[in-house]
Amino acid sequence: MTEISNTTRRSKTPAQNSEKAPLLSTLIPLLFWIQLAVTLVLSGVYLTASSSWYLDGILRVNGFTLLMWTTVSLFSALISTYGKRYLAGFKFEGKFMLLTLAFTISVMLLMAAEHLAVLVMSWTGMGFFMSKLIGINRHWGEARNSGNIAARHFFASSFCLAAGLAIPAVTLETYHLSSLLEALPGLPASYLFISALLVITAGMIQSAIYPFHRWLLSSMTAPTPSSALMHAGFVNGAGLLLTLTAPLIVLSDTSTLLFIIGGLCAVVAQFAKLLQISVKQRLACSTIAQMGFMIMQCGLGFYNAAVAHLILHGFYKAYLFLSSGEGVQQTHPKLPPQIRITPGQTLFVLVNGLAGAWLFAQLTGKGLQVDSGIFLTLIVAIAVGQVTYNFIKQYTLPTLYRITVPVLMYMAGIILYALAYNGVGAFMAETPMAMAPQQLTPVQVFFGILFLIGFFIMKLGIYRKYPWLYVQLLNTTQPFRQTVLKFKKQ
Image (cartoon, rainbow, N blue to C red; front, side, top):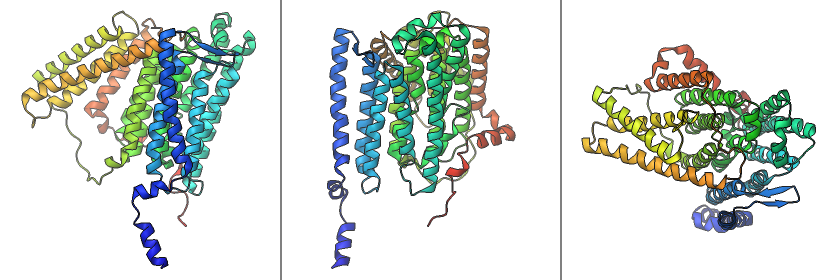
């Protein structure tokens, strides 16, 4: 009788198993969907009234707040709904749902924080709950170590943020974010610079910017839904923090430093991505590269573009992680593809790149003046050229297809991005210095050229001729030793 019972239990369908899922796995996703509906209604009210709401100097709700509330509610709703089925039968399923709820509340508090204490506590809460999600399976030694390492990084980030905000707060004797940002011009230049460096460091640690990237590479012990939540929302934290404190970055003259850090991180991480054989490790390196690009946008003074980028990246990366199982396959070593392009194809790629850049500039207004917006337009030209090349080299496809499809694709992509960018701009109208283009400097031009050189070295495969570079990149992108094959299976 026992054997028959066990066999019957093993043969139950997923639908039957889901009926026995913990109550939390049913209620919390439903709560997120209700929350999403509420934030959408509030967003509509805000766009009509265009006025912020304050609560006794502790919280404030403006367009930027509602934009991110809606975004994080959607991500949490999708990921928790996916996790309900994916984690069915997992011992820590209920714990995952509770941690996801706590993490979401922390992000929402961060975006509504007016008092600096609430801002720092919510930032700390984000890190604490995410470290618990990374090491959710405490019985697995590697996961436990990954969570502990992540927690140490996140608490260091919180310390840097608290110190960075305490300097101007104590000096100016104000502990409310809005009044602090307004009073920053009265702060000594040395205080501004130190405060900005600490805030930037806090963002770099949480967004896994080099050299603080290894905690993210070690976080692959987390369940896939946790990884999706991390890469869709948590790792984007630097963009949110820097946008909230944009006047501090601009007034302290650290924008060029941000641009350099972001550009170098984006190039190095793209190199490192090419060396990875694990699907999740490849996605982690891709996220680091995208975070570098986001930091680069902040350094150029386009914080609204950085926010649009982190939202779009969140959707894209969440999808990639949730579907990462489909990308696992057994492969055999093979020679890397060689780039071969005729002069006619080169001209076609260049023309399309310039046309894409022109369309981007017309729709977004970036790159129409001689300022830092030129860099973003140039990056769009490179991306369009890459898309065009990827199609034009497919000789098995009809010629007409190879010529027309890339044009239609990049036009649709640029139009969609322009809609997202302009929509984000409408919600961030009240955000101080959401768009503060920087004047071109020789340093920016120099590092911009280095960025382009690094990109072409990567795409042309020149780096393969230098084994020392391969070894260095491979060593740099290794997770911490304590998180890989450290414990024997019992």
